[in-house]
Image 1 (tube, rainbow, N blue to C red):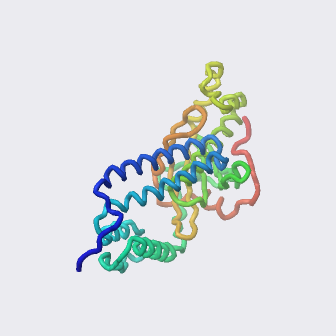
Image 2: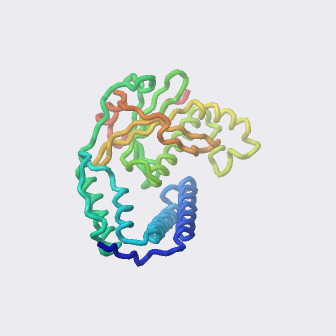
Image 3: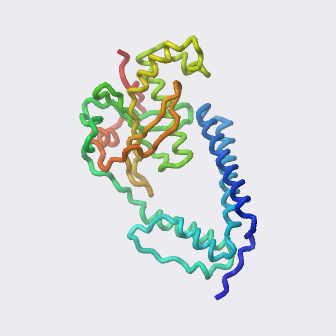
Amino acid sequence: MHDQANPFFDPGWRDILKQARARHEAARHAAEDAARTELGGLAHRAALADLEATRQHLHRAERTRFSTIADYAAWRFAALPPARDGFAVLADPHEFSSLAAVDEAFERLRRQRQDASADPVLLRDAQPPGLEAFADTAKAVTSWRRFGSGGPEALISACETDGNIHICIAHRWGGIGPESNLRYLHVASLLAQETITLRLPDAQALFREDGFRMAANRDILRGANKIAARLVLYRHLLPGAGQREEFARVSLVWNGARFIEPDWEAEIYGTLPLALRAATVSLAEGRSLPLFPAP
């Protein structure tokens, strides 16, 4: 069988794809910068819209790589999530007559596999080996929080162990991805600022515009950074349709006012501490508490 030619194939696809990737990467950085300034604001929403436009442009650029429709189909199907039982039947890539038909088949198969894995997969309840935090349910403080008007919501659990302040952010924003990650960084930074300010009220000056860069605030910054160094952050992906429950420590860099440079999988745990499980089943809705009383 003679494979049908791809009408979008371009011999100069390497340059086209390079430019599209650079544009998409620039849009991603712009969205991250806008989120740090005001998550959900007009500038952030405009940056997210541009990010989506560049994503679509990047996909169109990807199409120019393949000389035949069959090659494009093979590439698309290779990106499908794994089948739940490890066994799947795919259409023959050589049978497609258009790229639109390939895209339609890809979306249909993707939805089918997501629906097949819709039953949430829970972690086993047990203290992860080597983790001291959240071992004592009585010492954990839990609160359901909304961050800003119309902002993200999350279940926050915290405790102090061995001189460190452990904070777990549990959410249903989805798995690791650009928008979900931006929300986490925003929430983690706000919690850090709150925790630091409770212990060092003068630190509020650091979080106004570029206050942490001002020489007049240098002594305050030293004290705030000492508190920030004690913060240990975790991410608890709550189970839901198509989302498996996950619990991991997140490594973050404190720049004096907010968190940057995340390592989302600094340490992945195979079980969930009982204190965090108790938090998910017994939280009081609408209740907002400070993480720790002021000393």
